Image 1 (spheres, rainbow, N blue to C red):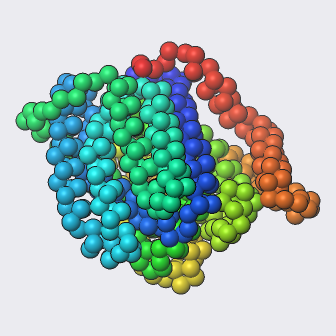
Image 2 (image 1 turned 45 degrees about the horizontal axis):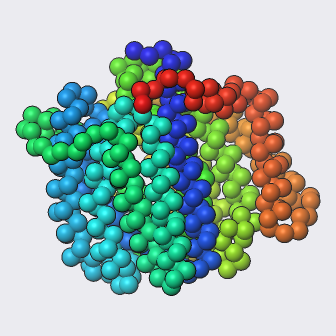
Length: 488
């Protein structure tokens, strides 16, 4: 059993390396999108977004929760990995075949008939995503977070280089498709090499019976989670059009790269860390409060800052032709505030063996999504984004109430963890908006630099007064890189 300090150190180290990989890949991806936005049009981004949304759902079904099973089951890890690999490959062939032939029906229902061939091409990626999830599971199981950096960076670089070169050559939307496939090939090869595991297949009956129930639960959770993340693409494609979807993709990519990536990175470390203390509820509650405070201290100011600098940022990154993206980014930044502070409740439920909470709350969210979209899309993309805020707030509140009943993590702990990050963010936002209104700055790039600088400096100053302990996280991360805390 870990002490609170040891557990926090391990969580911090894991989150650091995972977030380093995520930040690196997101920066590369952001450069990729910025370059491609000046070459391609709204329809190109919309069509590929349609294909990737379908691919994400197919991956969730075909992987069968095998990656999480490898992390969860500690008995006979070699055989567990072999069975997981076999299940993922069988599922990939079956699900990929169904997707290939059902592509016209999917395209007609949600998107545009032009997305049929893109969906078919991306379905080939399923044969790569299954093995990738097993290799990632092995690295997560061993808390080898540092090794995750290389594959993610190589994958992002490959996708960017291939995509940009093909876009310049006139491939249009297909430049994004081929870039994605090339990135996945490089990524799975790097994961294979770093995992140090020699893949082999097995359908050992005892191992299958042991991991299948957990895998099925995790599959349902993953499917519903993927649907929850991608249903917005499907609903925009259905109620609006592919061009609107292209604008939404560019807007959402900024919030995803800058803010939600922090949550994802922390999640990769928190799931195994929470699992290690699942039987000690007081320790679990303390660890959750600490991690929520740390996450909020990063995501809330980032989201507020993004909303403030959205106008100059969009013009600098994407160009003047994408001005329609600005108001959508501003509303989505508010959405990510709600999403980020409730994000890691999912890791808590998984760690205590209650993934069904995620299943049923995601079902509720999905049931409400079409109704919310039907109403909110009457006001276009901005209205749709406000609908997302309403829906996420309702689902997050329900999950918090359930967490309170199950493990004693309720509104009191939640609000206590958020008090200083929220106060510091409000003061930072006030200072930054004040400077923007009082000082007239010529040029989008200079305005962006000044506002980002003012925001960062004011937030650090405010946080150093309200909660100086949070600032020590950076120093802790630096020290952890030199300490052998993890088995890598």
